[in-house]
Length: 218
Image 1: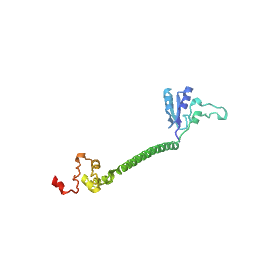
Image 2: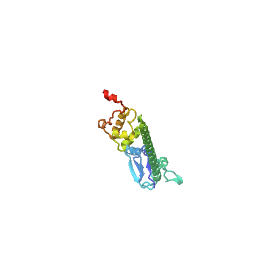
Image 3: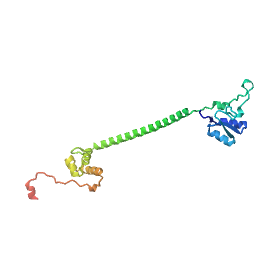
Image 4: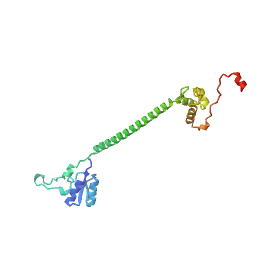
């Protein structure tokens, strides 16, 4: 049998009648407002068998019971407030709890999905930015990109001379005047070194045909 619920309206009827005792079926649940009224007006609680009063009748406030003459004499009337009180059985209560839990899971799942989507978008954006940066041309003479230089470094080439031999960055017309500093900066970023730890490229003087009279006059 589902437990009965005692609400503030039912206790209020006892208070108005001037009674100081209320009969409550065993196992009944008392709302917080009803408990406050019982404590405030010092009403005595009398526990009886479920559905019965101490005299074997249906439990209800005595103030609202009316005697009727004739065939119905002796049959008590229950308080309309008791009759209209919605009783929630265990199955309905469990169903309500399950719906609430399911709703919270949906909300939590939606937030997690939004967070995952946001993280994915951020990762894609960072990847796109990294890809764009790798497409930047560092050596204009030989058209060597940042990505090609980084690949060489990650494959074990850790000097400016090595990068120059592998990628040809710095072998163009400017002979590294434009790109050498940029290549050195990429080296420091990839290897976590200071600029002073990077050895410069081997410098060679320009070679061109000269007349013997140049040496004779010098």
